Length: 127
Image (cartoon, rainbow, N blue to C red):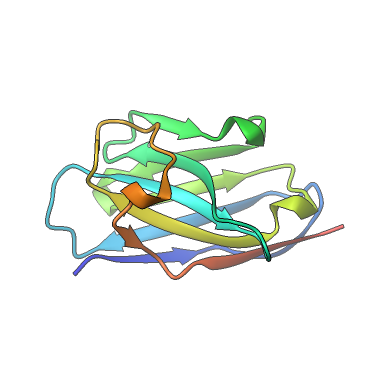
């Protein structure tokens, strides 16, 4: 049974940096991709970034203007989301997700293509 566990969230101030981690376990396939999504109160879930299983292909949402960087450690089955220059608009629940759909590609921003999801972790950026 695939399990995804996010960590590293919390309360930070505007301009701070934060790194989220997502550890995957119970994997029964060798190729996959993982993504990060976020959801602010009253808003729809939004794609943030994605990385394929060996970390070679990454994709961050252009709307982030280069402030976030996704990476992966295949040996640890863990992906990271390095967030910098955080703003109050970045506040939300951040979800880690995994897909076997098109695992070689990172540019898969549609949530429906991700079959497995973590519970989410809260990131709050104060002004």
